[in-house]
Image (cartoon, rainbow, N blue to C red; front, side):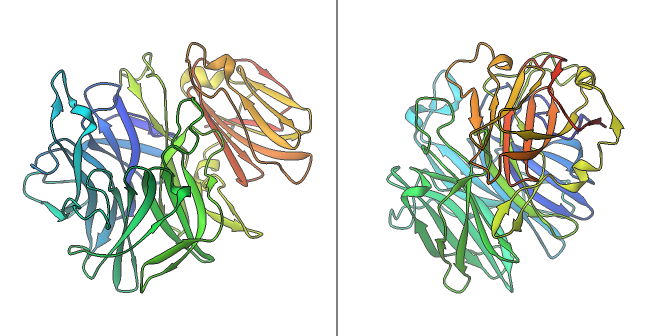
Length: 442
């Protein structure tokens, strides 16, 4: 089996959204949207990987794939829960009105319908796609409740003795909304409430309502929020929220913010780690596949971010890198040379107003109190993509950076995760320019 260190990558061909993120029976399980036939989007399956530490991942192959009339065109995104010792996987099941004649992996005129389904596994490693699937929420036909086509991505959790599910949806494809369902056993579900807002874009995808010690945090991926003509108009965002479990009434108590200021990350999903910390990962979108992988996985497209802990500090939500990641970087390095062997590099640096770093052609600087990043030199030939990004303004004219670099991804943690800025890259060189405090590899 193919293994990954640090960033979980496509084991070949395509991955997108993280699914079923769960600590179960001593292992972290991370499923993902997977098209196993080409490095492009197509009929969705669930790939499956496991890890003991959120750092070293082993791919286990395809866990879920279409077998039923209601999911014949895709096993779309969802989540996982442990109930009575068994792993329950919840997913969106897609059926096309008609496939495209020349490409059956796409819907003709984008017409399809979506329902919600589940699979139960005794051990979290074996899944019977023929015998153990069941449809738990049929296609919604009442437009006051949800959308027949665009209601998807069930995220399930438990509070007290009740199970809850949140789904992303839309009103007429113009205004995003989230739907809440509840269940006494995780099997039979009843509609409870919904929340709609212009902030949720035209369609809301991949909702996640996480309960923290300080209250609730809402994650979602509203579509069309940065419609400026550049790639990726759909973005991962978050906001603190009030939620009443009795009525399933939710309100956002602050404006939505970008989860990652590089604007490549999408469809985040959270879980609790072994120590009870809330951890989130997201899909790093790649505009073209990597075709020169030296490890035998062939052409691949898509990878996951590093795991980030969700913390409240001084009343602000922060996303520092998970401590298991930091603990792996113990070997001193002098430059970017470990990248040539496929090993990641960690830089720690302090940056003042006007200073810059150049990491193999990827430039990081501080201007007008903001951290700015420019990938123009390591993103050649890709049209219509954002080449620069910057953080919100910082309270001081200096900041601390914790930077993790691998051949196709740079993740910058600003002031211990107060903000994170991540970029997919292609073709980093070996040079290093600028002052850094330390350099380590694994």
